[in-house]
Image (cartoon, rainbow, N blue to C red; front, side):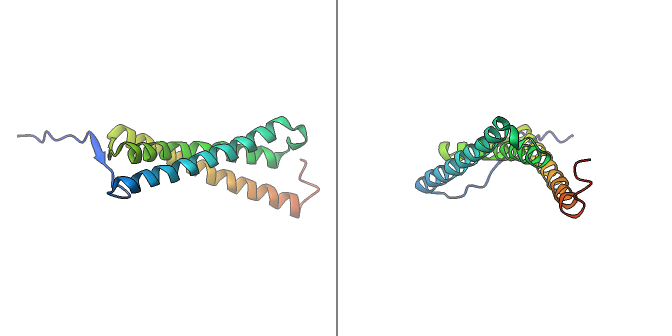
Length: 132
């Protein structure tokens, strides 16, 4: 006899059991999500529209804002949907996709922060080499 069990979904642990607290969590998550979308969109628009800001440091900040948008958009919409509709299930494929995208975006963000730190090091400690 073979094992015929197959995991098709996971059950997530809720932040609260009462409906009022779940709606409060949805409101908090929505506020955080909208603030992140607005602030990163403002950064992207400002850097893209102003030619004076087309320098290496602002290029890195633009990419950092894009990565932040991606990482917050990976996990927060599912958390908001679970809080709003009082569900706790996430499919196995959805969970794997969330983990993959979040880990990829976080790793890319850490790499970009390392490159930004090196850029500032060169700009401060070796200013004559910075343009090259």
